Image (cartoon, rainbow, N blue to C red):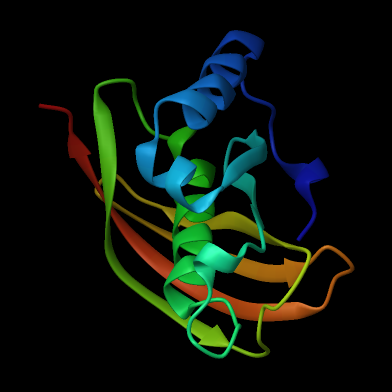
Length: 146
């Protein structure tokens, strides 16, 4: 995926979003995820390998990888919805292709289609050197904020 073809967010919105991802998301903090970059319809989430993410065999748990993939698609979508809207994942599929055992992974997502009430995103999860760990597809529901 290439981030260059996606429109930049306004500087203030991008700065606020990056700061919120860093300070306000307890689940992200628990896993160690960070928002590396974001544009309208595109995002990159980073997750460093840590022992706390592993199962008994020392391989990162699939749920940690899934979380990064889901978060990346959500961040790609956030710049395309209205201020009075939010979104929730309604369905997601992730194919795991190789174990995550060291370094950091990158979940790079792009929105494939956005309607008024649903959006479809795809995500590539790779190592820092580009080895594919997983490939996913996610559907989100766009709903009014409460």
